[in-house]
Amino acid sequence: RGATFLFKSTNDYDVEAASVKLPWESLVESENRPVLNLSSRGQSLEVFTASKPQEKSSEWDQGQYWKVTQKSLKEKDVFLSDGVLKQCPQLLRLEPAMVLKTADWVIEEFGAPYLQSEPRLLSYRVDQAQYGLEFVSTMMMMDAKGACQAAPALLLSGIDGGIQEQAVKGALGAAGAATSRATQTIAGDAMASAKVMKRKRNL
Image (cartoon, rainbow, N blue to C red):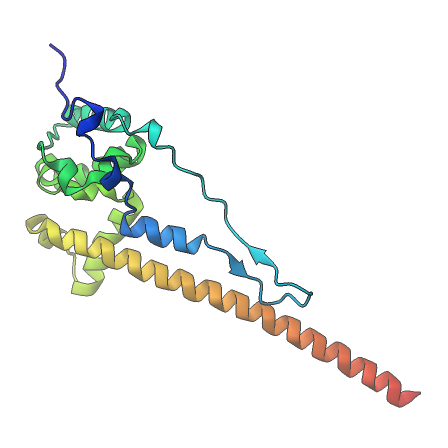
């Protein structure tokens, strides 16, 4: 007989819970909101915005993604408990490719049982997980791999802390760039005005 997957019918999936944005997804979404061009001098303010693809729940709401993820994890000796979607319902809709990249890194660093003990790690991108370990090491001023091995919750908190840190850096960088553009525009206008006034005095 083939592998048996959890939640065999559509009605057993909590699509509403799975649709709730993860904290890091909300941060990414906020970063993609319209940004004012502070150097604009026209009648209206120019707005830049990043395109955000619309999620189609029909691609995953019947367990399509989850079944692929679960099968691939089983091949990596990660056997998730029946309650994993209650711990992290978003695993129902997260793309298997993203989840499995994170799984490969966690397994390489800490082993399959570690991932099985804390499946919420699968809800992060691999770069976020990697930076989370670096973040904990920075905070502890030592290699934190051993500490994270003993306490998966520490790695989780490190990942969240790293995401927040990078979000703040990104926001400050964007604000600085916008301010710099505005300053350059103001300086250019001031120089142009000074040249006009000088020509008038020389007439």
